[in-house]
Length: 334
Length: 166
Image (tube, rainbow over all chains, first blue to last red; front, side, top):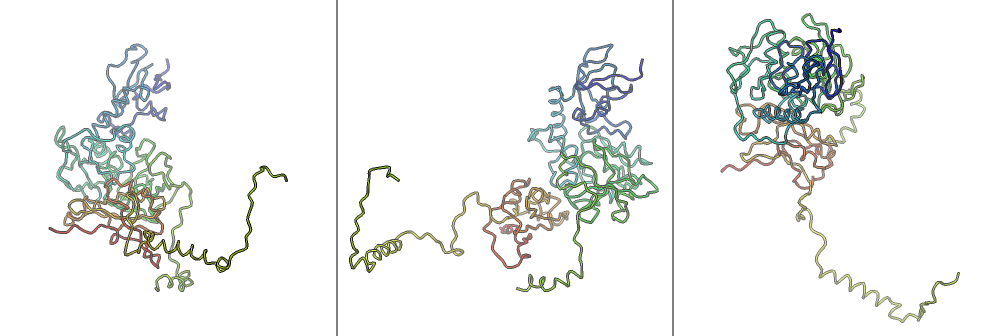
């Protein structure tokens, strides 16, 4: 007997190691059948099971017990069994339930995408676009919180939080000592540092990357520019604390923002340190590799060219200015 | 070639009378037409003192709107600049300070908002893209000027006049 189990997702069979979750099995197939995930993060141990956007229908439990599972299950937390048959996008029930989940997630989410720095690369925005309704049915006041200052590098917007716990797991697992967590319960739950002290940790900036919404954003990039006007370019540097592999977000000749590289599921490939993220914002600090690949379907794909030669930036040329002085004066003389 | 019909128009060729040779009937006819126009409604108006009413869907100069309380609606989300096919719009966003709360509607606002009127094709896509109902092309025709730089309209020309204090 082989140590692999067979699982069929939307009619596509794949052999995976036992103990793999349905979500990860789907990711091994790839494509449209991968359930979306707001809270599950493959790099963070213990994440998942909170947002329910990854729910799927198990139409056949296993080869030994072919009964279907009674309810839709969270694919990030359910491990595969041999002969399991899973329905994701082929099941109207799943699609309907998922749009219900999206609506629930959006109940308390403020509609401040025009102000939010995450807009354009926001998982919730994409999910809402794919599954959500045009308008909300919720008639009550949205949940609001007092603004808390959690340091000069990271901006916390608690109103936008969907309580995915990703940042808490990051703080637990990546950083050495835990500096922030969830306070209160239920509807009042809130991400916070306990004594509102600065999150001073070498890797604390990674909470920005793991946040699926705009609850944790980069203060050094705050309101600088919209994501879709900036050009992502892969670069690296020799960093003593981290791998130094990052994506630089250019506007013209300036690096506006540095983030970790993200894969197709929006998860970072390697966590980067705060020095790389916040302090190295000059082209000279980095070795440029190539423009980041962006799928054509992305909102930030417009005007994005994946050529190595960067777009020309007009420089002040004194000789040229002198040669054209007479002509230039004409334009201002009247 | 044989004529296709048997119809024939017989032209009478009389010699012109003296008055006709002096163009008198033709001149009177022409003058009558001209004089009749004196009593008709004028086709022209005295622009720019007098201006015709625009149609309701006319798209003229842009204006950046204020809300009921006189705060600027624009939050510098950049969707107008993104939708602009002529790339005429640029903006720089800033964060609102606590003392500016009655100037701007949201915590982010456009500190610089420029439209290059030479580039603008008045398609109205910015108006359509705006999620905050902040920009409308409801102004007059953009006036002519001499210098290129004078066609780059900043917030001083675009933002609506502030509400009058009661």
